[in-house]
Length: 145
Image (cartoon, rainbow, N blue to C red; front, side):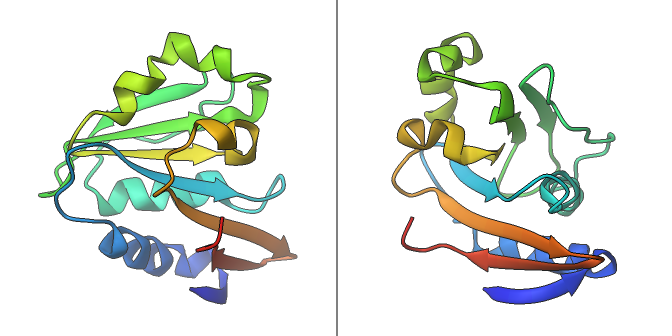
C-alpha cells in the first residue's frame, strides 16, 4: 500500500488495513502508525476502531498513554490504542503490562509514534507511515521495517 488519499477516504484505508490483519493469532496483532504531527495517525486509528465495531468515541491517549476498547469484530475482542510520544525509555512500558499485552490473543494494538518504542515491538508488527501536505495525505506500508 502506497497511496494518496483525503480525509473523506479514511474509512476505505481503514477497511483495507483491517482486512490485511490475520484472522487467528495466539497473540496480539500490532499495527504501528508513524508520521509527523497532523499526519492523521489518530484519525486513522478512529477509522480502524469503527471498522472493528468499537462503539465509543476513540480519542488520542497522549496523556494517559493507552486506552482499551471492546470490539464487535469476529476476529478481535479488543483494541488497545497506545500513543508512545511521551515515552522516553522502554522501562516506561512496564506499567502498561506491555509484555502481557503482546501475548493477549484476539487483540489489536495500534501504536502511534512507534519509533519511540521500536525495539519493544514484535518483529511481525504491521508498519504504516503517514504524511500530509495540505488536505492530502499519503500512507505507505513499510514491509522492511
